[in-house]
Length: 397
Image (tube, rainbow, N blue to C red; front, side, top):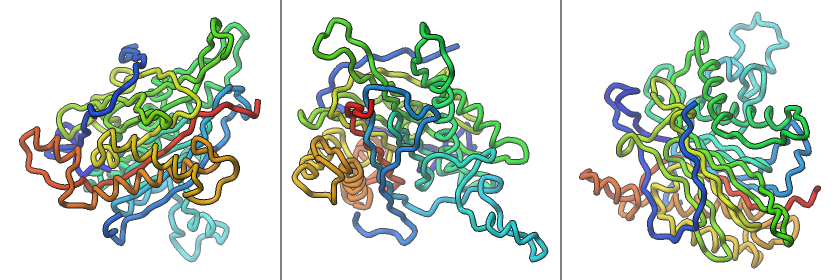
């Protein structure tokens, strides 16, 4: 969650940011051009972790690789509740039919009668499944506006992004037209559907960054040992980040590049923003290996930890999981499998939170602010959201 929003959105608010990491060796990846067509804890903060793998519309998309996922969350404060009709309002009178009482007690969020996918963490929103992970960061300054709901915007963008992807996967095709991911198109559809859902009588203001990683594969006709290999489609707009870590080499294979209008003001989707997925989102393709860990993170992580610290935390956490730490496993622990991704995500959130709550710590955000001539000290207290996904062979085929 962000404290401020850019001046072109909220008249006099500055904005947010991210630090580019340069201390870790990066492997090469393919970039497609932009499309044109811990410490003391506040009583209001929350922590959550878990695993979640909701089914796609096609229950068997027959992909040779899959994610095992886990997530962990820390909210700096309790999020603003979603307004009606996204949450059922309480009963307005004792004369209301008794049959509506269950609706007033239902705290789940809905849009167009459908349960909204993912989780809210402050103004952040995350999603995790077998083939897609996502972390969006709503601009928290909207909470100062009467109809401002940045957390709703980040969650709806995520929800409709997944919906567009699932609809495309399930669409009937001829044999000579196999499915190929089109993530920026999915994000554009999500953006348009979110505008529609938050307009008119449901008028809600907000903006959010967006970053997601969709797992697919590529064929290797010249490689007799492996005819297919995992391929990751990374889509980003703003300063949330996807990172790929190869724990066995303690190596950062890839990280997405932050997009800013200026310092502390990332590109973002929503009310009054000039940014759109079609014009401004960036799509990268990254070649993966089995055992790689893909992270989707909001700026609560990368404002407080440098790249090499993230790599070390992930690599060490997997070693500890393999050695038997971190709770009960549902099977072999190699590479962090069978429950380890939840442990890995929680350890990364703990490391980021420790810096965020330390007023004397050195942090990437502090260093970047000083470079901009701004006084800054310590970590940056913010919503911290991490989704960790282990790339593995799909043995269910």
